[in-house]
Length: 101
Image 1: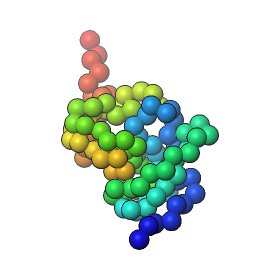
Image 2: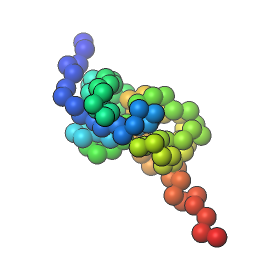
Image 3: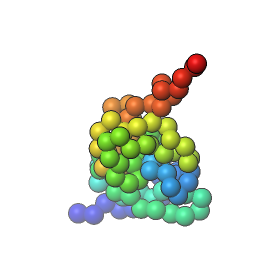
């Protein structure tokens, strides 16, 4: 059975980003609308995503950069499917990689 589409439930900063931020928690199978600068995308959640967490808007391979607002924020430590939660369990922050020398 198809889940109904809800109102805008996530925001994506730039069209090339591979994550969006969920505004209200979403459940597996829920079809959500993502706003990206006035353009709306549809996404089916592949897992539960808590409020204010990131969701993958494309398949991401292990080692790929996680892009938010046009900036790499981390690297995928495993493959992440479109619609899955993107969080500390499957990314490594790039902030930890910054050299202070």
